[in-house]
Image (cartoon, rainbow, N blue to C red; front, side, top):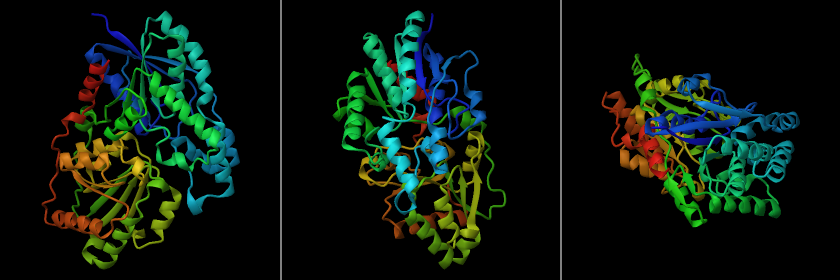
Length: 430
């Protein structure tokens, strides 16, 4: 039987690195198993904040990929201020770390490029894809954001082709994302953002959310929203090195990924600083490992504390190497934005953390979706950014278990988050 075609419109695609690319890369990998033939539409000349060539191995050899050119203003922005390259990854300086150049750049980004700096790809893509969809008999599309400007491509195509089935996939919220309030928006710009978001919610046949809370919030805003979380790929889990810390002398707490100022767990650093100062045995065995892009201001602060000699900063590694580093850790750190509106964000790496079986230390707002997952899987504990003594106690408990050789791994109830099972959920919706 001939497979049905589905066009996936995504900015992030290998060799792009980071979690944003993996969601639809994995869906595309497993969709053929369920009778669907994915077609990828992506920029020919994108400006990626991270590159990971190893993800190319997951791209099916017979996958059809359609590319057109995009113009992005990031090169101009980086000439104004080198720190503007953070914008490509949704990062920027906050509070006392903001220079006048940062403030100006943030204001320009929020008010001149609505919803984001990839907006110049919208009109050419609508024009190109209207013809492409007709010629190739494709009646189902997916737009994946951020960048949320890609949803405007879906909105334009839906207007021209009313019978088109359109799924708007929100890997992160739009106006409810934590950094939205930091964009220094004028009233008219804020209104435009919200009007465009509302139009996407009301016109998409289905809005996908990556968390339970986001799906609920999207429904309240008028969307036909369904939650399909991110997950872990069983093939990655099978390939990753099961090597342990062979010296068995180091208690490693690792952070894998991008850590920016808005998600910086100062209370954790305080607790760890006290532990290495007060507890000689802990100090002799503890290591804080970073794999990924850590904000310079955060590193500077840590290196001026008692943790200085305990830090191992490996920088950005390929996805496969990052998974290996999870395996050589005793605890894994995950952080979310502290405000209540971010409780629905479930960082994608938590699922690979779950697959590793390691203990997870999580920070974010109370009653977060991450806390629900950790409770259900018994994989770790979630704390608020106000906790300090309880965090310290939790780490010390795990350290004592590790010291006695009884810090066990845990992989209960995680099968629901495998990429293949999640793709089956998607096909059920299709």
